Image 1 (spheres, rainbow, N blue to C red):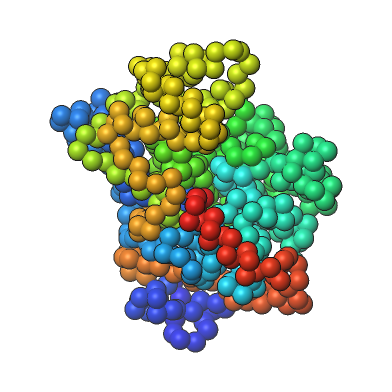
Image 2: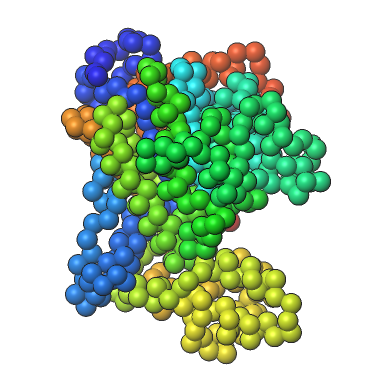
Length: 513
């Protein structure tokens, strides 16, 4: 279906902006899927593609022939990522841009530079009658999912983000239909093993007041679902919090304990589709492959690759899903690149295949070690699981010294650097970079051509939600007005805004996430 547009408001909120090009019509979609591979740059995809090709025997480093995988067939453009106050964005400023359509300061969660709440396209979709969902493999209170459903001055206010996203303190009440990810600790009071200091059990509140069905692990997730056509249909509203903090990296994930990103995606789409069946409005969902970014910060190539391959698997599934549903569209772009990854002349992915665990998992085991020979344990038990079975005593001594002086995070990076050296990889930073990221898209039939004309090419990240807004026929401006209808004191600590901004950029310069 097409809606002819002009500079006036037509068909509700379908208004064409100059930034969306010169096309005179916008393809209307009933449902929209937006996927964020956090911290994923163009070189990340190359590394994963080469790894897949060479470690599966399709080619060799001497005779490479790396075939396209997943998203390689879906490129429609590139995206600029800078924040309002920094050439290098953090995930909060970037997510505010592609969720709400505005530039803001690093650390901001869906608020403008004055600290006022700005509605996301998800909130606008909810007000227009669409079903809504969020999936993340990080804490569900982390920056990217938070920007779609909450409004705080600093991304570290995760307890307040949890309270808003479940509806406890949000002006719209309990409005999200589906949340899947980690972050249980932000929902529970300290006495129940959580991080909340207000003694509020948001999980109990969600079940009793919000009507949510809740799952804390794979068994409960599977048990809550009814049989669907090709997946599982969950009862909505549904809350799944599968880890206290972040969910496991794909390389470390125990399938009996946690669903994969693909598992969650299939169940979410089946559930939202079933719940909106017969209605004019379908759904909007944001899906984040969160831990690609965390592995980039750790300079952990095996963890980075395995989560990228899972992202590609999800995107291949979604491409087929959208092809079978002409009323559904898909966009995907990272928030930024992480790690400053390059693949210079000695690049060879084969050493990375020896890693069966991430560096984070192995360093966690070292921290739990109770014996009297930590060095021996690291050298003989842990490092071989990371492809470093031939580490010399000098290297291991250096790692132990790093661990004692600088802690777990420093050892994680040191291990990543050591393995990178074997594979010929170069990580230039443990933070973010300002490089453009790829934009991927899918739509049925002629809709893809119209998508490319309207949002393809090189785009600013603020343009992406404006495209979604148009094709769904919703209004972020109207939703923002609803958020501010009475007053905005529910956005906490506005009097501290200048100091919050200053500290956020110091944190960003030292280490972005």
